[in-house]
Length: 335
Image (cartoon, rainbow, N blue to C red; front, side, top):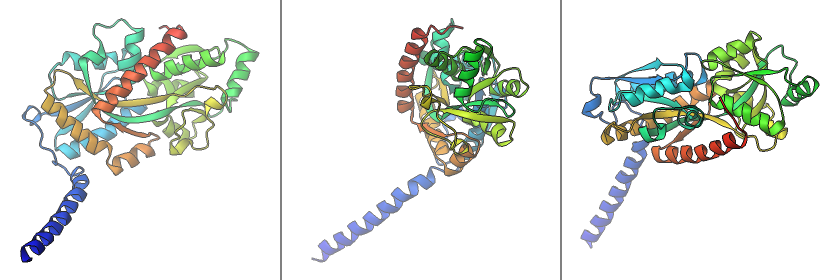
C-alpha cells in the first residue's frame, strides 16, 4: 500500500517536473547558447549574404535577423551586400563557397524560382542550395509618389485607357517578385506599362520619389518607412494578409480577380555544408524567427512574419516554382 502510494506520489512529482521541463523548452530556445555551435563554426564570423543593396526590405529584414542570430549564438554575424543580376551574384558566391558553413544566403524567390526560368545560369539553385528556414512573407504593396494623381489601381487603368503606353513602373530588378508581379498584373488586367529595373528596392523607391517612374509593386517592409514618412502613398495590396501599416489599403484583387502575390525571404546554405551544421543553423533560425521581439520588430518595419521549417520551406518553394513557371509561360514573360 505504501509502495503504491509512494509510486503515485512519485508519478505525480514526475508529471510536475515533466510539465516544468516542457514549459522551459520554449524559454530555453530564446536563450543565448541554448544550442552548442558545431566545431566548423567555432570562432568564425557568420556572413549573411544579401543579393540586394542596403536600404531595401530584404536588406532590412536580414540586418534585423543578424542581430538575433548573433545574440543567440554568441558568434559575430555580419550582413554582406552583393547586389546585381537579380540576386544571382550573391547566390553564386554561396554556391562557389561550397562547404563553407559561415556563408549563409539571405534568399528570395527571384534567386531560386524566377531567375532559373528567365536567365541562363551555370547552376540550378535548388540543386545546389539547402533551404534552412523562411523568415518572412509579406504581400506586395502598390505604391505611388505622395503627389501622384493615382489613388487606386482603377485610376492607373483609367490613365492607361486614356493614353496607352504612357505609363512606366520600376522594380527591384529583372526577375524579382516585383517585376514578375507587375507583368502578371498587366496580363490579367490589360494594363500597358514600360519596365525600368533597378538594383534593389532602395534605388527603385528613390526613382519613384524622384519622378522617374509612375508606380511600384513593392514589399511592405521596403515601402512602409516611406509611407509613414509621407513620401509615397500605398494605393493597393496584392494579398489577403495585411500588415499593420496597410490595414486600410484596398486589395488589388477587388479590381483584378485572381491577383494575389507575396514576397518572401529566407536563409539557405550550400548543400555541401555538413548536415550537423545545417541542423544547428535550422535550430538557431527557428529560435530567432519565432522570438516575439524579432516578430515585433519585423512588423514595426512593415514586414510580416512567416517562419517555415526547412522541410516546409522546401515544399512551399517547389510548389511556387511550378505555379510561377506556368505564369511565365502563359504570359510570355521575358527579360
